[in-house]
Each structure stands twice: as structure tokens, then as C-alpha cells.
Image (cartoon, rainbow, N blue to C red; front, side, top):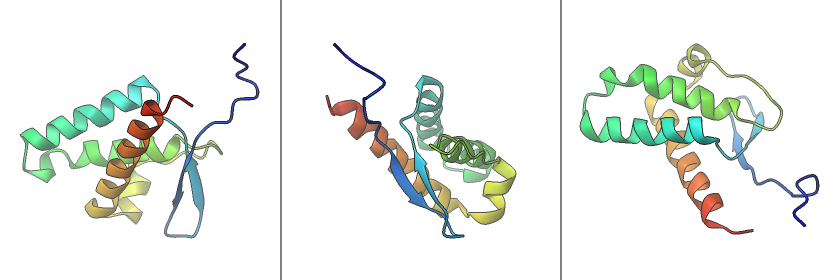
Length: 105
């Protein structure tokens, strides 16, 4: 029997600039689709300015997908992170999601 009440979830720990650590959960379909779409958009459009809002919104959604339920906004992310920081979060979170979906346990 599969018992989801005892199954341990996997999380990606991310330490923010203020020292707070958020534990990011595995993305659901909507967020995963948004990450994949953003990747395609970045590959097709070399002008970051055209997709900057999408990057900040996606970063906020990724960080909001945390165990504690803390909400992040695109405006708040834009205030504390630059494009390099946001890109790193999106990239590492995408890798995390890929590893988790590839692991049968």
C-alpha cells in the first residue's frame, strides 16, 4: 500500500539574502509548465528586457512554493534580486525538479 501520510517529501533549501532559508517543494504542473515556457522564451528572444517581468513573476512563484507557505511577489523579488540571482534560482529549481521526477523513490 502506498501511504501518502508517511511519505517524506523532497525539498530544495534556498538561503536568501536576509539569512532566511526557504524549503522549496516540487513544482506542480502549472509552475513546471511556466518554467519550461520561460526557458523556450529565453532561447527564442535574446532581449532580456522583453521577458524581465516573466522572469520576476516566475521567480516569485518558485520561491512561494515553499514548505512554510511564505508568499513572495514579483515586486518584492525585483527589489532584492538582480537578473543573475533570478536566473540562478530558476536554473537550479529546474534541475531539482528534473532530479526529483527522475528518482523513483
